[in-house]
Image (cartoon, rainbow, N blue to C red; front, side, top):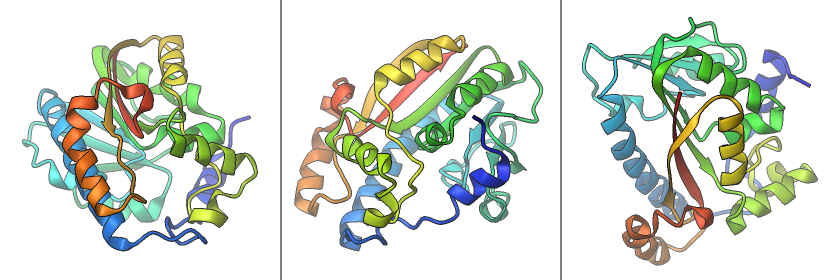
Length: 242
């Protein structure tokens, strides 16, 4: 059953990562996310600069948009259910407060849709198919869809899903009890069921913010060489076309 906008906002307003009973040194987390965003920025910039009209679903406080340095011809629209985060995002792009499963945008009018670490929140709210269907609707024929998501086939993703079956993820880590890592097979199925063709699947990283720094540094060197083994990646990137 679909959750309304108020319920979705409630879900995502009460979590703060690494504030549960399992703590991680700040240096480890900071290194991981800095490396992650550097990789994502490199991947997305080359795509975004090809297009004129781009939509970010679940843009939060701005996602990677402040670092893109895009041309004036490129129109970026950020969608999110959280009004407070959009106050920050609107300093960098146009924003709309909306639910991803009901986008207030015209059909066949967007070149690229980006969901960066968003779908694993949406799936726990029961609207993944509806959101993917809306992304397909607003895209032009030949338009691209990009998702970056944690993988349930990675041990960390599997543990997240087990914790959230019992609504314990927030207690353990400070994260949301309504997020579930998604397997590549499930993402492929949802995309195809909603009219998309898969173009590319790759692992963004095999590292983890709870790994000691020396291990993270070793894995980061290997990530590019291992990217094709996305079935075992911690976070994967998927590209599909309408």
